[in-house]
Length: 356
Ligand code: NAI
Image (cartoon, rainbow, N blue to C red):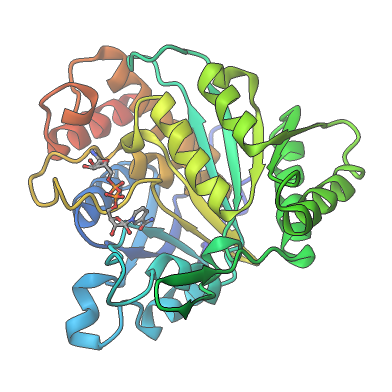
């Protein structure tokens, strides 16, 4: 990230115009609907009072033939240089071909914590209107650590690796997030009653970190009970702290409770770096049709701006999305409407121009 010097940044000086900040971010358009929805986010960010230069780096299935890998080193180098990236979803072939670009990216850059804020949005009809929870998920190990092998014909083993070191940093991230965002409770999900050693270690480590945060309530639940409670009443949750597999499943389920994957943003955080992306995948079933909902990536861009301290611009984007959804006239197919990606983007840009 390159921020131009701006002595007025933290001081409102009456009568003096605040200069526009300039940034350079990495942009990974991705596969499937990725280029359509990231383009939407770029257009929305262009309407903010910021000067943004995008370092566009293609990755995923689209570059394999030409470059021999879905994650060329230039992509990692760009993120390391810019420190902040906005990423579209990338396709991972099932059971064959290359392994997940997402897993490789998160491991290579040590993006150990995934954050997915799940909020009710006015205008989206769901059984609850007050959901405001955040799933914090471990991103580098667990069942997605990539250690699996065939032990005999017809018998496969996949290792769910949980370490104290990775759990410590994850738990610290979650509690620090809760503290700075004035959240009141962290619910930790586990399966230590059955997977005694691995989940036991995860749970004990989280409990140890929780001791340093006496003002934040810690709630412990088995993962099966947690997802049942989530389905019954998601408004009772605040921050939910989970390992990689449980977090992957629970965060998509939570997205379903507020209107679907097209609405939920996300960010992956590591030391000095962060990559923002929607919770959804490349949606090959609707790719290229111009009907994908761009809101999840647009809200990921807002999350990104909040992260770098541009909270006013981030809030403007969030408010613009809310305004459009509340009016209920412009809705993409997944939300029950027939609006195109481009029309939804335009409506958000227009609403943004009136948000100050
Ligand atoms: P998916 O999220 O791509 O799609 C699931 C369903 O939700 C589909 O019916 C799709 O049309 C719909 N959907 C998703 N995003 C939408 C949007 N913005 N607007 C409207 N409808 C939307 O999940 P799926 O099918 O399991 O995965 C497809 C590919 O995406 C796979 O190759 C998978 O590995 C990859 N993937 C990539 C992720 C990433 O890059 N972060 C995350 C999840 C999956």
